[in-house]
Amino acid sequence: MITEKPVCVTGASGFIASHIVNQLLAEGYRVRGTVRKSPEHYPFLLQLPGAGERLELVEADLLKSESFIPAFRECAYVIHTASPYVINVRDPENDLVKPALEGTAAVMAAAGKTGSLKRIVLTSSVAAITDEPDSTKVFTERDWNSRSSLQRHPYHYSKTLAERAAWDYIEQKKPHFDLVTINPSMVTGPSICPTINTTNAMIRDIMNGVYPGIFDINWGFVDVRDTARAHILAMEKDSACGRYLCSAGLLHMRELVELLNLSGYSNYRLPKRDLTGRFGTALMTALSWTQPRDTGTYIRTHIGRSIRYGCSKIKQDLGISLMPVMESILEAVDDMVRKGHLAPPAKS
Image 1 (cartoon, rainbow, N blue to C red):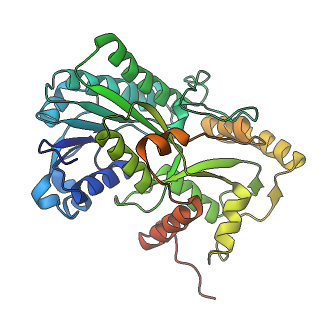
Image 2: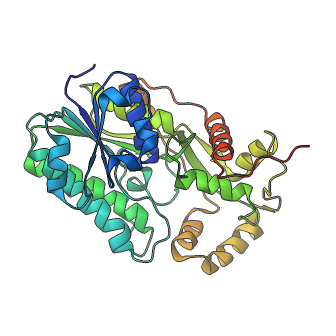
Image 3: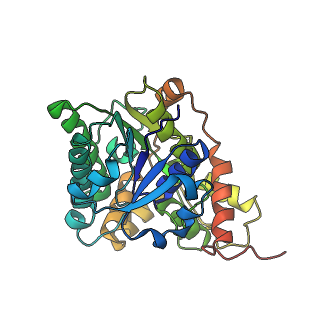
């Protein structure tokens, strides 16, 4: 489904968004991306295949609704990805909640003034579904995070408030467009933009000896290219509706370290000490109080527990196949080495 009208991607320079832009261009769409600075600051976007003919970058301020009105003009679809992803911040209200919540409100308000618009696809997160594992259940799109606050997991809180605000707008205003959200788990894989995203930075830190041992913790991962594809399918398929949890699989920290050890990265400072038992979990819980507040909270709410996600809806409704987690992570590591975020492997 190629529309002559442009597709607007907010926060176009981001990790997920740049892949969305790349895939839209590859499919022949006209793309209008919003960015924070003038276009020449984003050569990695301007150099994408098809960008010269079909990509327009426009400046927009996430907290100013009127700045999005020119970006949305004549667009049939908006994919709203712009939102901060930072774990430890000094001022959660201004650094996380305000840009996420007010940014979403600004986008929805501008969309309400765009008569051509059919649908908004919003990048949410599993953070809006839960902020801690629960061994008694499998989390799905029906779940909402009800525990986070400015003091407890403020990033999760910001994503929850932002997504709820978008759904509240749809319910209260009943606009001429509809809304679909994509709720990915930890997004990994190679990057188009020059910066390193939070998930890949965590993998880098594991390889660089930041972690004192192997903890009893697991994560859901999904490849960035699949995440981008999910957004586009949610835009293209008229039958798409509601929320879509997007996670390819789970990996325990032990499995992640084993994967890296067996894939040519054993010369890195990978953790060796096994802290997955009862003593190790108790030790890491105690040490968590020495960490920055939000890192410490994350450790205490996740260690010794296993997260599980049910992702049948996205596969059935959108018909998407998700790349195996281990393959995506290894491609992410190779990419970090190429871009200089990781030192090259030592030659044996």
